[in-house]
Length: 122
Image 1 (cartoon, helix red, strand yellow):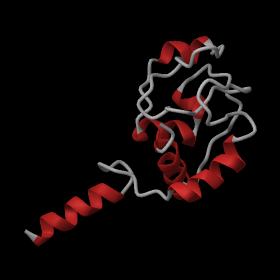
Image 2 (image 1 turned 135 degrees about the vertical axis):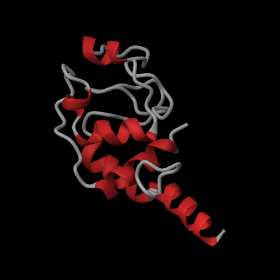
Image 3 (image 1 turned 45 degrees about the horizontal axis):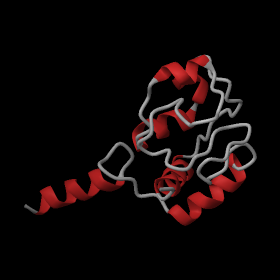
Image 4 (image 1 turned 90 degrees about the vertical axis):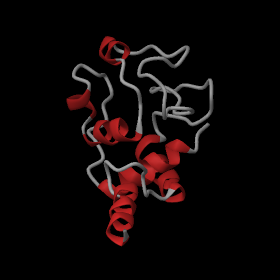
């Protein structure tokens, strides 16, 4: 029984597990430095990129009033933590043809923190 509990805990905190162990406060800092030049977190506001408000659980290419590339609009990805993690590593590999210029966030801890922050934007 104890081994089962340890395995369940590991699944909950490791990337690809049932939950993300990121630090939302640290993720807010990552957002400001890595994403904030192009994205905002307020609903209904867009910049060069679409608003990130409510991104977790949203389907790609669906923010009202934002003009998406055909690649993003047609990808029909649901932005789950797992999909966001993959996308944030290399957006152009995940959605070929995207116009997002960001080359990716290679640091797994920063990605987990960022995703934890994005999950708070509801």
